[in-house]
Amino acid sequence: MPTTEIYKRYSEAFKRQVVAEYEQGSSASALSRKYGIGAINTVLTWVKQYAHEGLRHETVHIQTAAEATQVQQLHQEITLLRQALADLTVQKLLLEGRVKVYQETYGESVLKKNGLTSSSMLTKPEAEP
Image 1 (cartoon, helix red, strand yellow):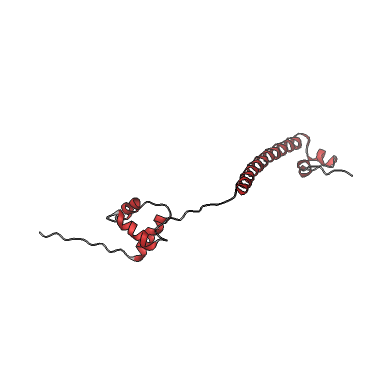
Image 2: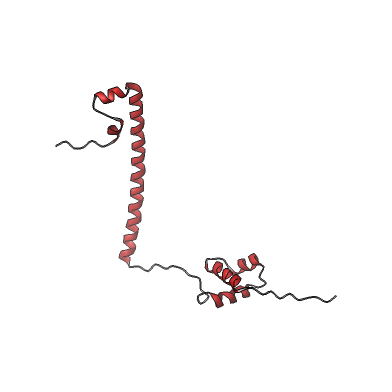
């Protein structure tokens, strides 16, 4: 019984899809396995043909030492601000709990008698002239 050789023909759209996945970080061998492409060299040939000079694209940040220092300082500032926000959130929740306990214990009328409201107890008092 004669054997029939199978020749695979891939569309240009398919080749470009494989190349796009390669450019996004997939390896040629992984793509070859994923799509049943016979040889890794086939994928690499497509990369040379359809990709930008067959190279993966990476973003490289070039900056001066001063810029690098500034970026580091900004990251530290963001960390401190996030910590401060977390602390303030906890303080707010504690104050809201205290106001609720106060209302349950003494009633809303005691707050109103003293010119206070739930919201005024949670805000920072304004400086008096």
